[in-house]
Length: 376
Length: 231
Image 1 (cartoon, each protein chain N blue to C red):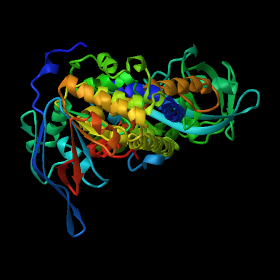
Image 2 (cartoon, each protein chain N blue to C red):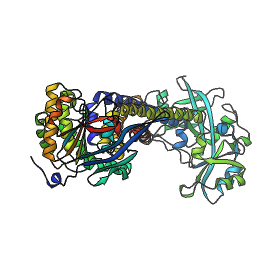
Image 3 (tube, helix red, strand yellow):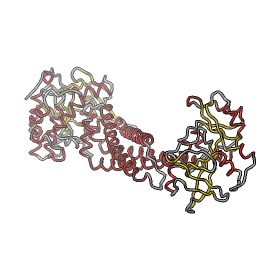
């Protein structure tokens, strides 16, 4: 530490430039983290913020199209409900629709058909909960699209009218589209393609997209056994995220960008400390000749990197959070969450230290005898 | 000058017996040191002169435990350095050997005082003689807060001498201390070196090309083709 601190102060321009680079990488990490979290929230917050523990789709449904292609029956839902390890099981309908607001403006919505008195039905932070057909509780974010309480939304093609009776407390979206929670019967009529004023076939009221499940005491029920009994294909809520439109592609893209950022960060830090060590070869040889142990020199070098990285990351993450807070609430899908940001900062620190440690490890190979003779 | 008991520990000097150091040069073997015998008593300053490539630096490297000789023995403080592992050698250098390098070879980031305190950090113990006292002994107490970039060549060398004495070494190995200095400063530096050698009872071996400063030395030896002989 003795030497590390004095070298940081002495070569402050060089270390300052490096600190600026690390801080900028940290800013980028925070923004990518916010964008990544924002995309997740935009994609599946309707599921994330629901009390659902697992979802059972129709048997053989592929992961990437489960919500749009799956169709289950009330009988299958009942088989799940009868299981001992299941606290709640009810039909859930999902469908992305085009609609128009009362003022004629276009509106994209994901209809979540739920039992009004069931466990999936959301509570309303504003207005009231669902009670009967033709009503809708919308995601709070739908307000940004100009929707208000009491508005009547008309679905394209079918002409079905939905009266907005409430808004949820927070954002509830699915596939980047605001969710409109509607009574299951309303969803079933839309699903059956029934136009306004017509009655659907009785069979239409027997189906939905999936069975929403909640295990006893918050535990995930035995999905394999339930599937075998009900002829479904169930997965946990988190696994079901992959079935949300575009979710897997988006998260994989963001994860790959972040992985490259971490790798670049480790390489940049490693390259800097390699050059720094090479520049100090002569003085390191002198110190080794004086009897400085490899451990002494390595510890000092790694501590120096730790100080540089920590200071730079604190500044960079702080700047990133400040900049990111300006992006929240804009049209960009952006959500600052402490967990991913802290994990990212820890990864940058860990990988940076690893890069610096590898770079400074060359200290061990410096021959002290090179301290003798002419200066080169 | 403030000293403690450890600075007055029994001095045993340096003893090289029948030391040979050979290097491979293609298919041939070149003897950098050829059956060298050398004894330096505590408080004695000897100079070793000779042409470039004669083996002077090799002698310093072997005496300082930086290079293991092909054969022979190197004894400092009753310890044969040949028997020590690399890690033990590093520890031995910390406690018993001091080096003065060309141009001081100081750490650019450290002030003159910190150059000496660095040795305390490396050895893990306080200096027997306070670093500031050592700087005063070489006439550098007024420049204690200056970094090497703000010191002249002679001043850097003085700091280098003081730094080499921090750990109260038994043996001081000095590599061309006047290589970058003018005549007047060269005399000043070797005078300081001679004074500190006697003051601290150190066995000092100085390698130099500078024949003008030999008058300050107790003994002068010449190295030619890896062999030592009196001048």
